[in-house]
Length: 182
Image (cartoon, rainbow, N blue to C red; front, side):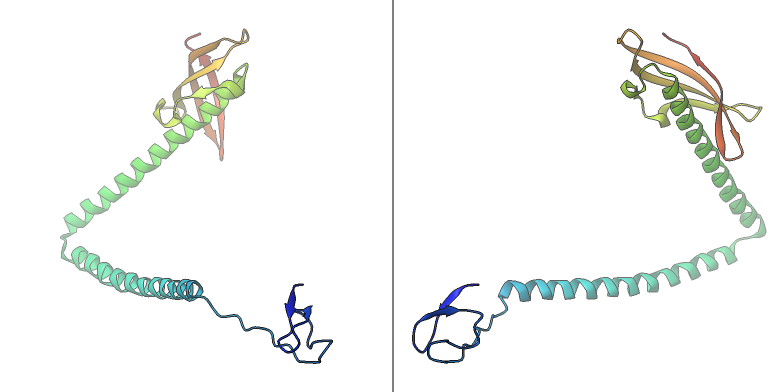
């Protein structure tokens, strides 16, 4: 609550009072003007909303012609070319799935090795995607994990572990973990 002067009798009164207690003059609260900055921010928000709505419409208009162009391209292909394109897409998908399995095996081995360390909190692994990994013929995965961690004497040691994992259902299971370097 602030004190203001009555415009009629110049006595100090509360700015919340509806009228001056001395002379009875009604007090009009000063009207606050909207600043230029407020109007500018409001205009920028409106322009941003309108441009995002407009760009959404444009992307839909661009996507439709691209889809028809792909369909026209596919219609021009001979059956042999279509078969080759289908095979290429299937090969790419299979390669991505193999790569995903290898990455999952690498990560699982990293976690298994971490659990077997004396001081798991001190473990400093390389990026798990750079670990050597391969899929064995029996469906298991062989991975080499590189880590620097503290041993039981509190010394920081660089080690390489060989890990064999397998997927059972949705879970990764460690089949064998062996330390290659001390």
